Image: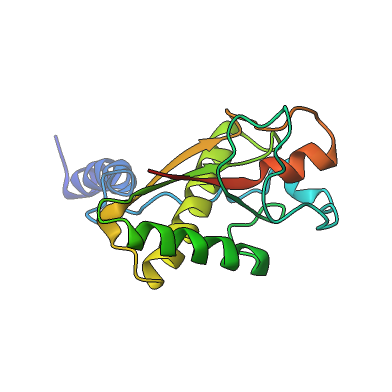
Length: 173
């Protein structure tokens, strides 16, 4: 015979596991993934090399094109002061041409994961795009793409090559 006490124990026994499963269900609130990894990559713990790289890519045999480029500090998407003059020249050129366009190709050094470098390259390209739009270049005439570390312009695995590969290439058409 089932007593009131046994029904209470049975009800409690069933409700506790079900209550625990309720916490595992879907939330109505979707959270976006973080823009950057929460744990810094091993490369982020290394000291940044000195900022002695040129403001524009040097035309040598290792470069794939002769277009303008701007450079970034280690693990950063903030525009440096030396990039402003280059971006101002590009903005003037694009605005002068009725159909002028610019593609900003974000690049990184080989340090860090593929996903991290693609996100950082995109952030670098967006920073340059925002500055160009601030200078009056219409949004529709600026395209961005991130190559991460997939298209190094300068060969080598030393600090100098890494510094030169932390860049945005500006392809004006």
